[in-house]
Length: 114
Length: 111
Image (cartoon, rainbow over all chains, first blue to last red; front, side, top):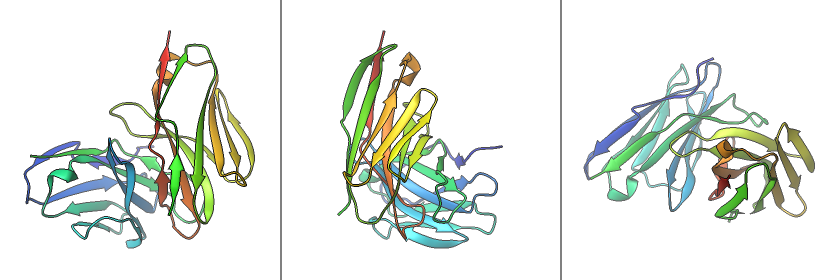
């Protein structure tokens, strides 16, 4: 069974640009969550999508947005990039619902802002 | 607010036992997860506790006390490959799949 796939693995952008990251969940998983990981802040929740609807949102500015498609694949967009957006962006999928099913993480996209 | 605390670093010897603690102060607790993350890799799921007590899975065990807001991960017969960051994460009621993570504990296993 294929795991969570994130593309691209590495990305270099400059301040002011925008970026789109992609996540393909494990087959059958309907929930996709996005996290930002930095050395100083650890893993911080960005948002969760379930059945194409945003179910939950973390405390990030509106420059961070996402969406989910009917096949459960998800994209995350960051506009007007800032130096502080340099981080590892992790996507995690799960079956969904209030269950004990763990989230399974992809290898992440490492975003560097110059 | 929600708060999860773990020690930043720990060191242990190959073959030994190590206990990594996690304390949390959250509202609407609905389960606690432990993940392992090797440098440059994705976090991988280790264990889940929602009721008080000990869950055992091979060399790894996890304990939860909801009344104390406390959990620990116990690693036995340590191997060099266990050197990694260990992340404690809490799920809350009515928050879907959202997980709140601690900062992680960097474990170094020495020969």
